[in-house]
Length: 537
Ligand code: FRU
Image (cartoon, rainbow, N blue to C red; front, top):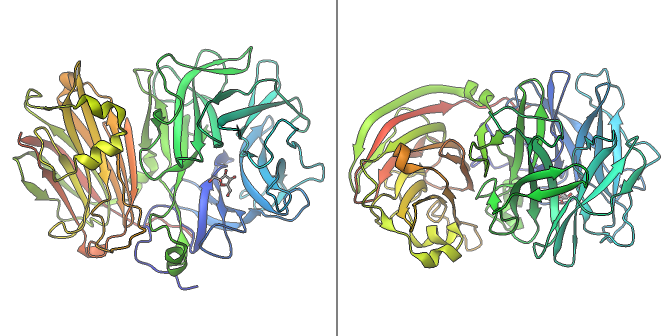
């Protein structure tokens, strides 16, 4: 295979070649982080899926190992799909995964255990003969029954796991219970279900602390809970905050939460099938996601010889409002920062832009805080936009459409004259009761390649910040050749874009800060770093 190097990432995880999709079994065990992910060992489009396996001491630099799980038994000979790891008492890891047992894609749940628990890398995994553990009963759609979660123990001492499913147009998180992790019994009710969302892939369910940013791993009633699922139909990750009624074994969404297509998203961009894990070494919860390519034709992937990246793992916690999550790249990433430049107290008038020079803009980490004198001049939010997705509003009000307070932000992966660039920016609107902050990561002009089938959306989300109190907005972007991962307002709104510039490549890429609003804004502080390559081998 010829592997095309342009567009390959420097510090985001990618195998040397071929197709990847999600990581579903991150875990920390005896000093190593394990990454297992869906991988095609024979090509750069989806197929022949095995569980590729890498280990790391810091979640950033990786040692690649042989695939841990691959089709070989009657209970998985047509596929080894996603699943999760659980660490059983006595420090014993166990994996639950979905096996495909026939050409009709019938799905069952299997388990695997390390062949040699004293091997620090846990290279080899065994799939015992008493598999499958769970087969779909007559009420379950056999081809939509997959991706078991990390199991948790209830107060009765029994394990629970949920499995993504769908019945007609209802999305389901079907629950199973077990005393010994071997014999599983379906619960009467799913943990949760939602009408008209279609099938749920890769559900995840975990507690978050009401206070502070530490992770928790005990499924007690004193916590809030996060239920995430991936809707097959839209190919996005959604989450809902709620409570867990441990007696009834039901998830109860908080009042006012929307657990459907207009609900909260972990990331408003190219980001799918997250999976969280609790990291005991740093007492945090970490989520991980996969971003596929935006040049979506199979020919594109075949020409490149690779497809898909893992995004930077993010620490996740509950915002002090209790209404949403906050996410931030794991602190270990900072070790890759090298050359640094700074700006401060720099005013930008309407139409002005300033270049961030002195770093490698194609592979960088940048943090900026903007401030503005007053909110009085913010343009009005058209009430009819309330029915639109943020992404549609961003399509109407792009980075070049002059506003009052905004658009302002970063022009990433930019060519000298901005023929190509992926702007990540804010725009502030005055709404009836409050201000509305729109954050966009707009791929519309990311490349001059006139590829009709290229996916170039103007991804966007709203940012729930109290601007009246702070009069400040911060933005961090992780720029890495063909990916821009952005975190608005300290990680309240996150957006990832995959883009393929043709001019803004390697040392020809630029980074600018711009303001296209009539009101001046100030760059209070800006710190930008060149990023070294992660060691992945
Ligand atoms: C999600 C998904 C999962 C499935 C896996 C197969 O991307 O479709 O539901 O287990 O990929 O690779």
